[in-house]
Image (cartoon, rainbow, N blue to C red):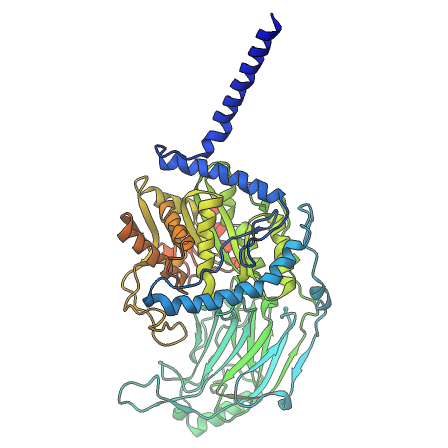
Length: 638
């Protein structure tokens, strides 16, 4: 073959190869106006994936102090502060959120810089190394005592139990109930004020974030003047994420012998239900029977106004045992989700003057309070690689930096379902903590499991709405999904049931799925009050409860577009904000199909749930085991 002809053929072959390369690898990255939305979605996804790969290999840089770019392996959301309100009606609310966000982002900047500059933790490490602060606090006192001169008069009393409690630990309280006080709030119109005398002894866990009460591992509440029953009563309970469980009430009747006992003790012992009707002769007989040790003796209610008492709480194998002045009064079984070692504070408040407190036989080292004890560094709990194609469902899970146990329980329970298919992807969205050691452990956890996205501000209840926007952004730009779900780290999700609900809607329709509230009015007083400046309207738009809801991708893209254009109205209650955004989309863009279902349960759990809220780490594992056995029954129904 002549050299010139061979040269022409070689050039033609090179040109054909180049055109083939363009057709296969470059042209699909450009959206064409005639392409369907699904194809545009996939093309944008591939371009975004290449961008992320380039960013992961590039050195760290930031476009502004408030907008860090994602680096490998730590994923950081690019959500940032948008100053300014869109209209006068939302100006006050927007300025309030702007101020909180600006302060939170600024406070987080040095913490984030420290994390990003630290070397990545090796993925093969068996467990995160304990922080220096954890090492120095590993030893705890076996006894904690507080005398009268150290107790503040008036308000409540709080005593730290550094390493919690263990079986055999004892709490002794010497105190005196105050005289009854008049309380007008509970009285009916025109009725005389109620006379109230009560106090609360509580074992508290660790407070998670601002605006959230610490869990009450034990709530012991004697009501000397009674409550709605009109007679003295003792109520015991637990409370997790500000949600009370079913109370155990002792009203003077002894528990049945065939009822479950606690370490062989009755849950409630008998006392005289009406001291006023007891004759002098019966009182004398009662005291004589006590002196000679005769059983089945009637005792008076264990607390009286102005009378000193000695209360001892002992941690047994099955529950707490309460003795007052030497006699057993009540026993309260441990409940799933509330561990002895988590009881790191004793609180006393109410109508009571405390004279001394002694805590003995306490553990001297924290058995599970260290991060490394909560986290199980096993390959089976690691997140799967991001799929190369759009997913059916992306789940964003709101969490707090120090919720190591909650995230681990989610990984070991319902998140297992996401590893069986690339159709469902889930990630935790976590803001930073004020303690460096917590953030350092968080980074080690994120490096190992690969399922955490850092939202670069200091955690605050008023800024949860920005976490939700970060979830929307991730579900649109990083792992494009047909549907995006938001839930909390104390929400148990039956993923198959959620997908079944979503698939009931005709493909291509805009949907909003959850337990939807209609015509709810803002609270204008109390802890969760909303001012007229924050929300001038009389009712909220229809909104799904925050612990679990789903939106379609077109709504998510609209929200992100409005946010980028600084026209998205922000409100501190994130679930109401989502309802507001969906309503605006519904009226200005496309009709939305609202799917209301009570099985996206907000107050806790009920049998047949789709999502169960306020589930502790132990509840999560319990629900998962039941689900694996084919049961959708709850653990500790609320």
